[in-house]
Length: 405
Ligand code: NAD
Ligand code: USQ
Image (tube, rainbow, N blue to C red; front, side):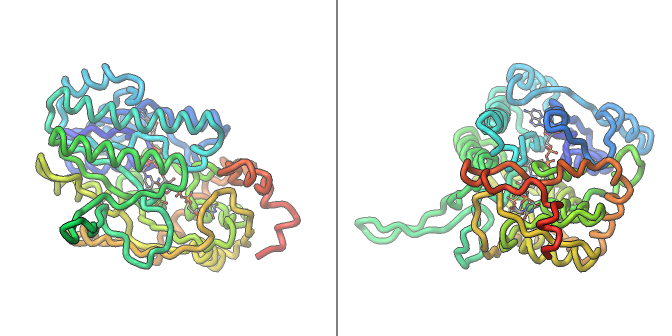
């Protein structure tokens, strides 16, 4: 297949592009490299040394003999170029990773909120309308998030996207299927909820074939292909805005930094290893909906964990201390989470769990590149509201917290 990987320079997009190229697909990476600019804005760098996208593509050609094509294009701001690109290349499938994906970054200031909404909503809408206009019949696979469902403990498993409901009408109860009500917990998660409505409309109005993957928190760093050469290494975010919880705990343990648990650590979240994330995308591509079908939604996760349990697991494994910090976010202090993920299991996904030794691998990578870590960038300091900002802990290594564990 000819596949466009939008956002193919990012943490999930790069290993996906490699995996699909390895299987013989013709891959076109489209990216505006905004994520690299955001690193510059924040004064951080990936834990792992990433080469330029052009250099990464060159190394892949050298290692595999396969070509990765790169196109510098901003989906949110270059609609005409996007449309012309689709018209000229007519991909069979499009995988859409190209959004601003950090919840803390999206809550940093009004400017960051505006940027995140403009970037994410316009990128998705530009893509959908360009697909209609060019008349291409590509299968669109979008990376959404488990966070659209919210974290109120209802006690029932979260279904894969849709909820069956009964409505009282004057003639009795009527059954209906609706998108599961969204309850986003950040401006970033809100843009993913808006994406869902855009997909619903374009599938229904124009018969676009769309799959939306509600992905949990991705952990790990290597995949089979990124291990093949030092310069194919994946991005690894550790800072307070882009680093995600489990990967952060693992690098914190590697550099002797206390594990930064927000609040009681009673937040339960869904997780998936990077290798499984890549595999799920391959499975979703093979299971495309027909034109006229509703949007196909998968919950792309393999296990759920409570933040404090993860911290305790990493502490036990490495001897790290735990710092219990005031939570910079507005979120439920404790929640349960039960999630349906039968569709991917039925398609043959064999989950990689936390127990499988891969936690050590991340700690090893972090130790190897520890000299690249700026400890001042580790604390999560983006607060959800002005009131919360007053209590944010900017120095979790400070003496006051050093003894807490
Ligand atoms: P990332 O920030 O590493 O990668 C996103 C890529 O998209 C970057 O290379 C960036 O430059 C590019 N991009 C952003 N806006 C663009 C635009 N307007 N035009 C062109 N390119 C643009 O993020 P990631 O971790 O790889 O996440 C990829 C997708 O998966 C995101 O949509 C995210 O919401 C979703 N997701 C990620 C996780 C996770 O834990 N990382 C979990 C669930 C869902
Ligand atoms: N947390 C800590 N300590 C930390 C970092 C985070 O306790 O040092 C807590 C947070 O308060 C939160 C939980 O861990 O309760 C998860 O935070 P996270 O940053 O790992 O994940 P999140 O903000 O939800 O976002 C990440 C990705 C996003 C994706 C989402 C999937 O950045 O792109 O959509 O995971 S999900 O969480 O399922 O919505």
